[in-house]
Length: 227
Image 1 (cartoon, one colour):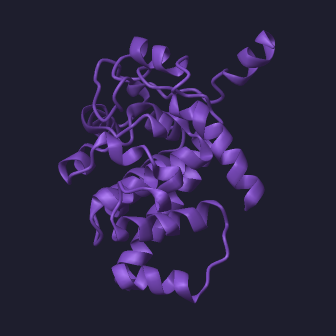
Image 2: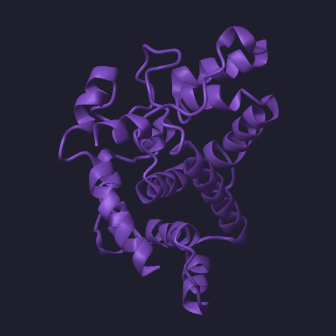
């Protein structure tokens, strides 16, 4: 079993060092280190192909951090995806802008069972149904779309769907790579979830029985079988 775990945890794609990046790419990396979401490690992986680096950086800025829909809604959907695909790298990040728009750590607690939770208002729950349908490939009906249209304009639905699709694709890829925080441009805690602000704290959290990824593994398996 020990040998298997070592095999699973091996990093699969290297980080491109800053000295091999253009000044513009370094500027984006510095933004990642200072503000996060994304943190520098995932950007250093995408830097193997500058077009991929800028595809994500520009799309993330235009669709996720900015756009026609309030950011906090998209942030909840981003972490819903993390809980579903069990991307620990992404799931251990929190958006600073989302916090400035009123999100608190308790808002992340019930994401997998959002319909039953009192943490979310009806607008947030409607957005999360779209994330749920995309991630779990659920069939939708008129009632589903009536609910979305009640709370969101068509441009907002389009942007939300694109943001969810972008993060779902990237998280599904990144979770395979076994990258982790505090490995590139280490020393900042920007956008890190509580209990993950340092490498030591993150390592301690990951062996805790209350670590979210351990709970989510069972939740995700149940949802996959039911989908």
